[in-house]
Length: 182
Image (cartoon, rainbow, N blue to C red; front, side):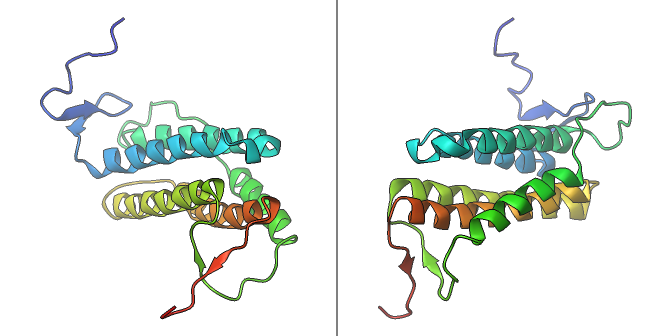
């Protein structure tokens, strides 16, 4: 089977369930941004500094594939089988955030992304995650999206922020705090 089908050559694609939509459709933008986030997460996972959390990051990538499938499904086609996504997935992130925060100094300033390439990659993942969140919110305003999807994406951006701080500590890198006008 060839990778190209030529069915999208006129700017349309199919949702799971077969419905054809424009590639500019909110649903396509939402799951496309989730896919972009997943690629950034792959880069983050591949960094040596994350060796001990490879399984954790892989689990999150798996959940992003599930979210992508949920967003790519036509909500009008109930017969489309969708992968399981539950509140346990959100609890997983919350537990990881809580464990990292317990080891971190209290945050008193905004953090300027940077200080080490791995820390910066975590911040890039955070900002792409926030964009994905905005895409999902727009889609929710126009169509049906499981509320758990938005909750997970919201929590995931928090996870990436806390992870960036945790990585700075582990790599013995000073966080760059923002001080207006300096």
